[in-house]
Length: 292
Image 1 (spheres, rainbow, N blue to C red):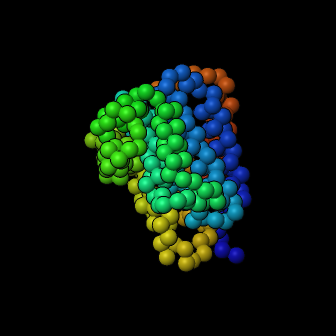
Image 2: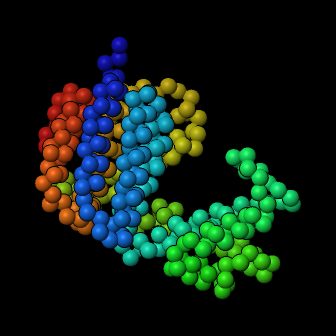
Image 3: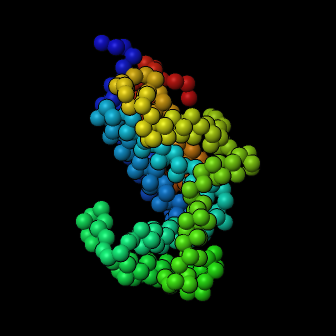
């Protein structure tokens, strides 16, 4: 038996406890502004990605776990960026809604004569697609509507011979939501020398995303060398995953501490459980508790 292998079931159990406690802490915090509600939704996505990745680790699907953690990494960048540049949150929310209108417009654009069958086996027509576009536009916020119309250069969002080219040009060549621009967000945070400081350590966003993101991106894109070999859950892989989980939860906790009041006695038991799960993971991976 390879002594370097790590018990993935034991790893899953301890990491599951840590994530459950972290999720409980996040849910106990007060989100009383539109900005904080947006951050809460994104943090829930990170936790969901982490939960799912942990299940895949238990099942021995290491590559798939890394792909999910790539998604979590992207959202960590977005949460960090929006928390430090809260004036961008309205843009993020508006662009998220505009994206839904764009998706329906692209469906309309792809239609040819007659009817089309989508991936769910349903049939549709150009007329129905136009109606759906209009419905999507009508339900977005006034600020998103104003921003979209101004960017396109039209007064009313109507699919017509006159407007079609303008709408198409905007959606296919100009519209790129801020939350797609990970490199730009990272560089802007770097320019303000953003770092997370805790009682024990100081690290930058680069300490979480650099290396891990590139590696997981190559896996997601089907790199032959990653998919053509069996990946065992050994000490190296366990350390890799452990550092991602621990740094991400610490990163989010310290980041939120600048914005949200953590003075809640209900949180204390969960913090204790998280510390114990952390110690148990260290013993599992390194054979001993590390200095804290």
